[in-house]
Length: 502
Image (cartoon, rainbow, N blue to C red; front, side, top):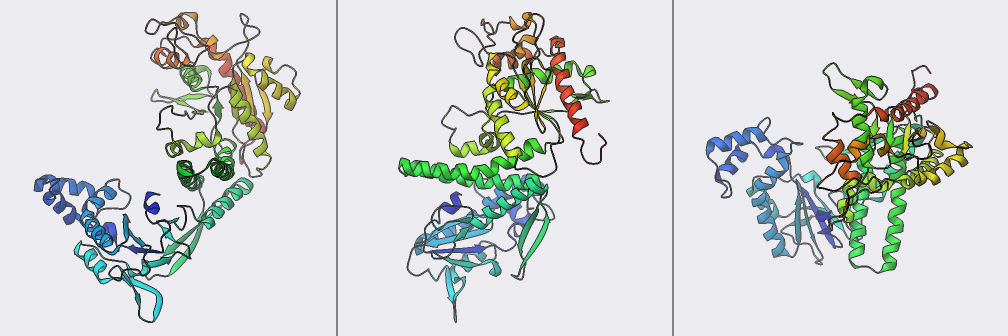
């Protein structure tokens, strides 16, 4: 994005590709760089050792985490030469791996960098000065991947459009949207790969698409959109900000539908959404402790390790520090797009959204249950009211579980003889553990975090339960976990995957 930003709103954008970029940085160049560069000055033995680690078949391999870093170090001399050339000619220069870009608003593009071929005003070739500096630095230009882009046509830099703002191509967005629609209606889609061959000809192939691949495309689009929203928030009026947020919300709806499909409708194993991340800690350790009684939820392997057979959804937490800007949030785009932060109210919102989107999904799926685990207290009253409206069950709080719709279930914490009207998950720990003091403070299960008088669930989960899991008696969790097991077993009977008898 920063690479594209450098060439935004320019009259000319000239792209040059370096031929065989990584292969041209061979073992000898890497070794020699480490020996001669003033920032390293390594001994020949050390330089040889590092070059042997970094190279494969006598060159830097594509895909190695070392290759981009070392290639940038080796290419620094090239960048120095080209920055000077660009500055001299009134251009901007950037390099992204093997992709060189020059741009300017001058009326005529500098001939030293690029010039028109005779008799073909729109065919451009690299200028003599550019070719000389590239070759002097140990590289070569790929003539088949050289192009000049004008301001009145689409200008691209490393795959992003830069005419006005840095953006994803509209046809790319459209293709991704079509693939998402196909996935949710048919259960599969094709991915189109366009290749430029060594002779300059183009070829198109279609291969079966993958869910992780599509997830990457949607996350890529989302990251660009967030970047542009950040730019808007830096300098435009409030009305423009509102318009941009509305546009972003519309784009996010495609991403949201995909996530609901891939993470829940087509989940590879049962998934449990608790009211908070602390519940995940309690339940995982309870399952490990009671593994012999819970074969549906966990398997004890011959090695002695315990394999949990369900997935506990991990909530996205918004940072309170300044680092929580739109760009850093993109790293946790799944949690942000689904807007799940924990609590019974969030689970109710999820149930409503999931119900709406299920109506649009016709692809095979829903073979694994999605289980909403809620505290059976007054905080769940709205959820219980929603359940009554959908299922006509009069007292859902007394049920071991409720089948809400398709593969969505609700499991309330079971009521007990000593607590017949309301329970919360912390009730299943003995009083001895709940009376544990941390830094002299008592535990208050009504709070998530600590204050000057007490500590909350987060500290209880991570400083009391987690380090003492092998000592804690989790037997009071058994009925709750058996209810979760019953959901899984019941769903398998009514929704068997293809090829498995019900």
